[in-house]
Length: 322
Image 1 (cartoon, rainbow, N blue to C red):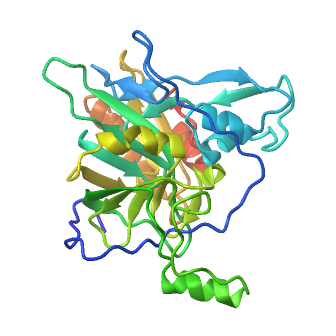
Image 2 (image 1 turned 120 degrees about the vertical axis):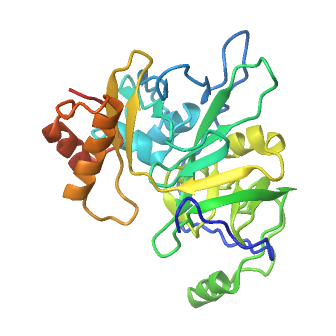
Image 3 (image 1 turned 30 degrees about the vertical axis):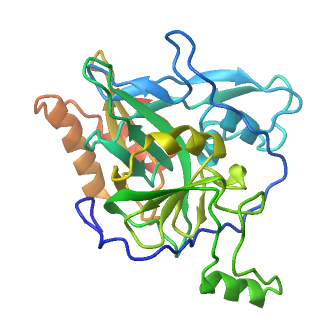
């Protein structure tokens, strides 16, 4: 599907999402509340120029920290923190270790309305409606998406219903697989600590797909679900009551992003493509074309070699253009 696809009307509620990933340590980290002019983590005023928000910074790990603890406390997901710190142990970073927080984001090249989810980036962007005279803002959160064979569907849809403390009805496919493993699944999982939907779920106008919380927050920032979009429990709690029914949700797959800061300096960012295909010459030429278009058609404004290297690494790091 493309980003212009509309889905058929909502037909029935199938809660399909399920994870086979379990992890050890979990520390719930609050996003914090705004005080004075300070916004919560992941909340930014929309830039008047350019398309970038936030900043990259470092923190120091304590003896008790895991890299996932630090990621959750700083609004980034598993893949983001891992790629930003390739030489740091996930489970034992070590007291005094400097950890890079990839807290800078290039906004998706899409209409800034409702919710935009970039599956390649494993990240959700929410553009809340504001009153006249208020500063437009964007909120961004790491998400989990569908794993291989259960890809999260792309296209434009909308929210249809909000469910607080939802029950989970495992679909037949999950129950069959669980029975084959000798671990039968009940027909209904009631609200509570064992419910993989968490405390909040937002239904989409795509039968069987939701944006929901999770009882396994260490999986946020991974391709680990059966297609649904998972959020950290604190994150979905912060938006649940603020996302109106009927909000547009645009699910895209944009593994390459080109950005400009308020001073006009250019940046490029690439993620591993969800279809795992290598970037070819067509992709290189398309990215170079975007850069040259922004530079008023200057055919010599893009460094082909640098663009090629960024695409080959595809590690999610935002690289200043040379």
